[in-house]
Length: 192
Image 1 (cartoon, rainbow, N blue to C red):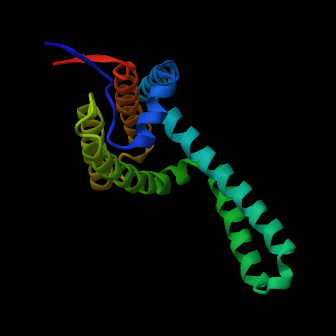
Image 2 (cartoon, one colour):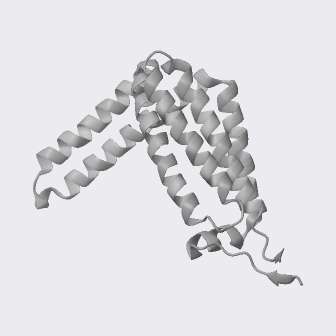
């Protein structure tokens, strides 16, 4: 005897995000896979592009911090707030002015970030475990942890290409699990 039953995730927030419009998830998954393939094909370009993005983020964050410091000068500690904002701006300018040197630092930071993000992804996969396609999330997390460790172990020798390559691989696997989760989230699934 077959029953028609709606497949639900154990976490209601995940359930609502994925099942509201699976077409968006499929489109985003495909886009992330394409970006990952481009990064793998052009790793030095992806490394430099990532570094420049972080450099500009530092500059913008420093300017915002400076505005905040000036607007909150009545609260005190304006000198410390201004010093922090100047450090952000200077770090951003140094990275943007010489992105190849920034790639070294960014490679180490990215390795740590990929490792931590992937560890959280493994935890999320186990929270989703009874759901369909949770294994893709787990696989992506495990591969990300391995990539993070690999980046640490080869730093700084292959920093010029490794950041772009591994970002591409990580993006590709993230796109695959988003695509698998979204395509498997039909409102009604026939279960035994």
